[in-house]
Length: 456
Image (cartoon, rainbow, N blue to C red; front, side, top):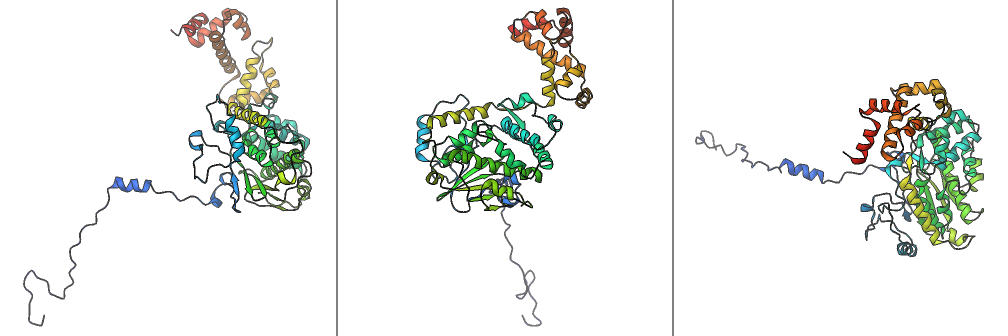
């Protein structure tokens, strides 16, 4: 438009930059956006950022890895084409299926460890570690107060000892004993001292099957949070044992003990001349590891590995089973026993539960005193009083509570007369029990028994 020309009202000049109207962008509803974000697969955390006990050993050589199945049966079923499905020897798998016996314990997958026993070890393994610590010079008084180290706990295969107690024992043993204290502990673990796990390792028909059974049922011996795996690659078999976040002294001892025990069981199964071709340990290299070279029989030892591992050549070809072919029926019996052991295992009671058990066993005695109960628990009376005070209870309150609990149980579950129950609870006569029971429940023992029987 030349000079002197004026645009008509309501119309822009041709050279004016006017943006055309834009349509508003349509956004999906908030609920749909949230749903779309919820379906997005989260980015997995890199393995090197995970804590040690969450790491899983990798098979870098492309070999066939076996990991024990610890998931509930609904997610543990084999799926065709799934690369994560566990693989086993076909002939053995079919043989197990032919001899399948109904399991009264709800049919969980073999080797399943209930979460209730996590962070605990078997009493057999704890006893081996405790004896090794005592042999290294640790005073018995330093171990007597640890939860789970009571004689009755260590003698019961169904009771599990807290992992923290065993870790503390290793720390004391390393601080007091020689550098090879863990190797000496493994040497003392003769065949059978680790209960059924030993025989699962040594009784299988092939060395690979024995390692798989040992990996699947490693929770019968150790803490379920630590995994044992088996990797087969060509003519080599590698057994790995996970690591956890303990103190450096305890980690060093546990690593060396675990690897030495595995080698000892391999030699029990295939002869004393078994030597691994490679050993990897997760802890840092010590100043002198001559004791490890002598124990493992090889200088091919690496330190600072991502996980503990031991590699063998094809044992079935190099060293046939000295006692002849394995007994499949015996293996089935051992696996079923191990399943039942895991199903019925339970953590050992703490010191308060043990105190109440000792107190209940002392009620009917001639003399019931705090000094006597403290002596049975291997502690001083003042220590017992202090621990009861920490729980905001007293000696007298505990006596009343235990008597009330046992009186109610005997009245409900037995037909003993009130006079006999009074004697078992340490009362002089039935009248004293009636007064106490009236104070506890607001009714007499006879009325409580009738209510418990009839439900009225």
